[in-house]
Each structure stands twice: as structure tokens, then as C-alpha cells.
Amino acid sequence: MAFFIVLLGPPGAGKGTQAKLISQEMKLPHVSTGDLFRENLKQGTELGKLAKGYIDRGELVPDEVTLGMVYQRLSQPDCANGALMDGFPRTLAQADAFDSLLAKMGSQVNAVPYIHVSEQELVERLSGRLTCQAGGHVFHKKYNPPEDPERCDFDGSLLYQRDDDLPETVKNRISVFFQQTSPLIEYYRKQGKLIEINGMQTVDQVSVEVLKLLKEMKTE
Ligand code: AP5
Figure 1 (cartoon, rainbow, N blue to C red):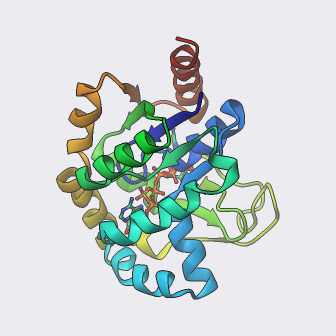
Figure 2 (figure 1 turned 90 degrees about the vertical axis):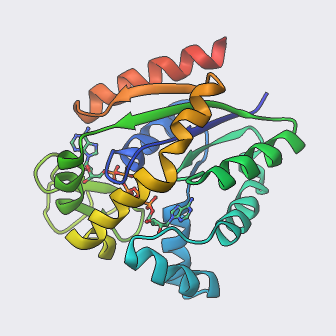
């Protein structure tokens, strides 16, 4: 039986950080819509060019564009047994469309860990974030510093600050989350799938908590 996880949380809550660990432990592919857009941007595709303006302003890319990209990714064989969705769905329309797609595949969303963190902490985390160019690994100047401040510990590639981590864009991304994405908290709570996670703990404490709950849900 396929197992689909939706990782929910505001920008900077630690979704990407946790997703790397959860995907290894649960043996599920990590599908991050943000990473897919950035990969398209790097490759200079039409999709990447279209998404760039929205991402730079901290707005959401239109649903039909995002859905097309997600459907294509989920049709790949590695997603046959499920996936860990990071940053998708982000609107009620995306959540509805995702439910319909999974129903056609005879599957469903099984668990929705929602990582919550105070707004002040989100700004702090995003302003100090360092991202690696090759594998998208994330570090933090203060909370999770790489051994070499300029290079990724995992693949040695250069670290950079994302354009959308500039203070004005960060503010907008956080307000977009509260306006357009936070209704999903109730949406999944009503379905009995929401798992609330206190994100104001260390990375290790958060992963221990998330993994324990996910494993329980998988064996139920
Ligand atoms: P996306 O890339 O998905 O960005 P996001 O949701 O804003 O999330 P982030 O990647 O910024 O944060 P995160 O929660 O993953 O935190 P991280 O683990 O890195 O999307 C980017 C853009 O793409 C969107 O704005 C939109 O334009 C577009 N887009 C994407 N999906 C879309 C969709 N479905 N529909 C429409 N548009 C879409 O951690 C942050 C920092 O904190 C790091 O430095 C990390 O080291 C540190 N940290 C993590 N955990 C902890 C901890 N417990 N304690 C201390 N520090 C920590």
C-alpha cells in the first residue's frame, strides 16, 4: 500500500531539513516543489522562467503550473509506493486536486506533519540559511554551521544564500503562508491526518518526534 506524507509548515519551519531525514528513514522519495522549480530555473526551462518572477516576489506560482509539474514528477516509477511531499499542496485548490489524483491511483494522503515555529524564529532561520548548489542541502550560519563556511559538508559544492531569503521577500512569503496555505491545517485536521509538531526544538528532537509518529501511523 502506497504511503503519502505531506509536510506542512511556514517558510523556514524546517521542512526541507526534516524531509531529507524522513525520506531516508521511511524510504520515500522527497518531492519538493521549491526544489523542482529551482532545478527548472537552473536548467533555464520555460517552466523555470515562468516561476522565477513569482518566487522572487515571494508569491505562489499559479496552481495549474504547479500541478502540471507535480503530476509529471509523481508519474515517475520511484513514486509508485508513495512520496514525501515538501511544500505541496500549498492552496486548498492544490489539496483538492492532489486528493483526486491520489484517489485515481487508489491511494490517499496518509499523514500530514505540521511543523510550527514562531514568526520571529522563521525570520532568524531564513536570514541565516545557507543552501548548497548541487544537492540543495541546507545549513544555518548559527544553528547548523557547515565545517567549511563556504562549502557543503555532504558534496563539497559552494553554498549560497537564496534570493528569496532577502528580508522583504521573507516577510511576504510568511504572510502568503498565513493567507493561502494555513487553511490546509484545518483541511487535514478534519480528515484526521494532521500531526502537530513543535518546531521550536533542535533538528534532532524534531526528527525523533516526527519519525516516531509517522512510523506509528504507517503500522496502524
Ligand atoms: P520552497 O522552496 O518550498 O520554500 P518554503 O516553503 O518557503 O520553505 P523553505 O525551503 O524556505 O523552508 P523550510 O521549511 O524547508 O526550512 P529549511 O529546512 O530550509 O518554495 C519556494 C518558492 O517556490 C515559494 O515561495 C513559491 O514561490 C514556490 N512554490 C513552491 N511550492 C509551491 C506550490 N506548491 N505552489 C505554488 N508555489 C510554490 O530550514 C530553514 C533554516 O533553518 C535552515 O538554515 C536550517 O538549517 C534551519 N533549521 C531547520 N530546522 C531547525 C531547527 N529545528 N532549529 C534551528 N534551525 C533549524
